[in-house]
Length: 134
Image: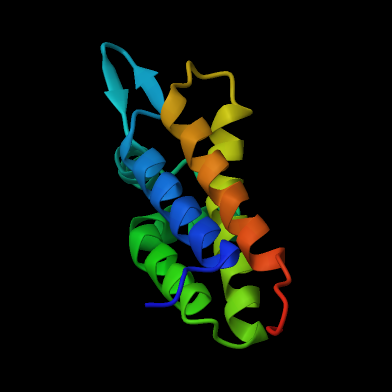
């Protein structure tokens, strides 16, 4: 069985850490800690997203586990440069949403930071050039 490449290892680690972070508490509202998915639902119901990009970020967040999985699988399978571009787009999205939360005046929790760390690992995996591969 061939040894996994550094890119594959980083992609799997980044995807797993980002996914784990998305299920951890992101912030506290009242007496409850909320995950990213709970925040997405609350923001959608309250209509706090005013611009089209904000609305897209909120509406699209529940599919993060699926797109992370797709990005990781494509990177592990050593698909074309398109896989790396897709991985970068997914990582940028997964970085942007917690960055907005972390930049807010709300009482944030560690889940958003964990998600950012995972997305950063995914970025490194996408940018890593390995010998013999594009």
